[in-house]
Amino acid sequence: MSRGVCPRVNSCGSVWILLSVLFAISVIDVDAYSCHEVRTAFQLRQVGPLHRVPETPGTDVDLLLCKHQGPSCCTRKMEDSYQSAVKRETIHNIHSYSYELEHLISGHLDAFQDMFQYLLSFSQGHLSSLLEGSFSSLSRHALPHVNQLFSSLSLYLRGANVSVEVTVHHFFNNIFPLVCTRLINPGLDGSMTGSDMSDCLRMIRQDVNPFGPHPFVMAQELAGALGAGRQLGLALEEGLEVMNATEHADLSKECVKSLVKMVYCSHCRGLTLIKPCSGYCLNVMRGCLASAAELDQPWRRYTSLLEQLTHAMAGHHSLELALLGVRGHVHEALLYAQLHGPLITATVDKVCGLSTGEPAGMRTTSPEVTISTMTSSSPLPSAAPSQPLPEQWLGRLGHLRREFLMHLQRYKSFFAALPEMLCEGENVVEDSTCWSGDGVVESYTGRVVGNGLHAQRQNPEVKVRSLDPSLAEVKERLEHFNQETQERFPKLDHMEAWDELGSGETEEGSTTDCDDEDGCQASGDGQEKTLVHKEVSAEEKSTGRHAGSDSSHENPSKPPSVKVIGGSPSASWARPWSMALLSAGLCLQWILF
Figure 1 (cartoon, one colour):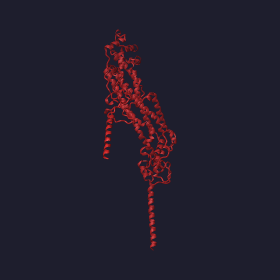
Figure 2 (cartoon, helix red, strand yellow; figure 1 turned 30 degrees about the vertical axis):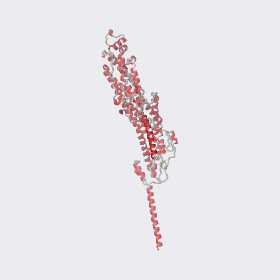
Figure 3 (cartoon, helix red, strand yellow; figure 1 turned 180 degrees about the horizontal axis):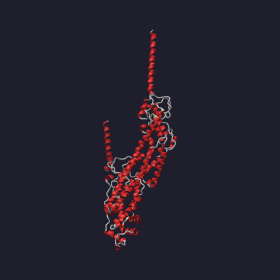
Figure 4 (tube, one colour; figure 1 turned 180 degrees about the vertical axis):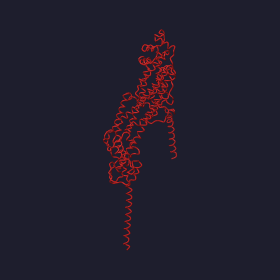
């Protein structure tokens, strides 16, 4: 009897054990095929409405992008949400990198323009003080023309269609009637100089040449220095337009599909934490940004022109010296007119009928005699002392130039390096298990293509058919700007844009923490701390001063020689002591052992 009971007991236990195992397997199977992780990622990344994600994977899902064998946690509507999300995320990532470059350009555009306006304002006040102090008879009537001169120069630096040469000659044309009636012939009755007379004097000013070579020299210096500054401002504005156009360029449909496959198709299998392979990501991003990569060559040329324009404007303090030299040129021009006053009066009297109001018998018939009398008995007015720039502004433009060029180096290959920047860090996996678009692999075995439209013919991940029309227009415009700049400044290629970056830059391109306030000085700015108004004028020549005559600044482009203190001597005396200690140690070891 006992034999009959025992088999029944064993069979019952076996049944219970079998049922328990089946239940455990079913629980594990249900947990393994849950879409909980997919729902969590869908919600955290704000892909779309959560109700689109199923609770459990489906088997009869007809997907377009994320096709694979087996159950899937994705649906058609989820694929639509994934496309919108990946497009938004990719554009945001691109903007995060381009924002730094855009901020660099816009920030320095504002900084350069502010510096230009300060120098213009300082130079204008400098010239006004000269007229008020040395030529008070015409200062009140000449000040409006001074304001007009610097207002036009300001517009020119901001990109307006203004000619510097015309502006300068227009200024001297306007002050010529004042010079004739208030400086050369101060006793002339104002009623004799009406609007017709003033117009006549303006018209014949360049023929009479009352100011000698000074208006022409002043116009040439300003045109050269301000031309580079103006073109630099236009170039920075062009750079902002390029960045704005590239930011608004849309991603193609093929690109978006490839991005979904790379970023989100692994979620359909419940693999929410795996990351794309590095080579796979590069192929996808280089395919998506193939049109933008076509900007690489014109952009490199553009940044090179930025360097050269910046150096041409501020490398040798050209802009500062040109603006600060306006005072000297105007002073020399007025002295020239005053010195040749009788000859000028005789000439304009024949053309415009200018009369001094004196009896005919008292008019001078020999201009040479009158000039000799003037120089001996009537001393020419001396200019007011030239005031230096405020200490905090000394070398400010040079410092701004160096800072801009150092930052610009990082972005020379921006459009070629953008795919690499998007595929670095935590976004991809280099040498471990990763996602290849079709499954989990140890490493990506596909061919990694290069940048540019032509290279994408071999891209296994993205089909690139043609260049984006909007970016093609941007490329053409940038190339046209580069060519136009080169034609306007043909000597830019012969300039070394980095010959004055100074000793603050090491060979590796890093900078020291040295500051001018700490007593340090970059080799390229040997003149900045001593920069005062180096105006090439007779005022300086008469006092024996010559701009830039300091021997210590003969070649500011070369770094200063550095004398190493405490180097060789320490090594020379340390060597005998080391030998003595070594000998003593060996002797002690021989005695003890």
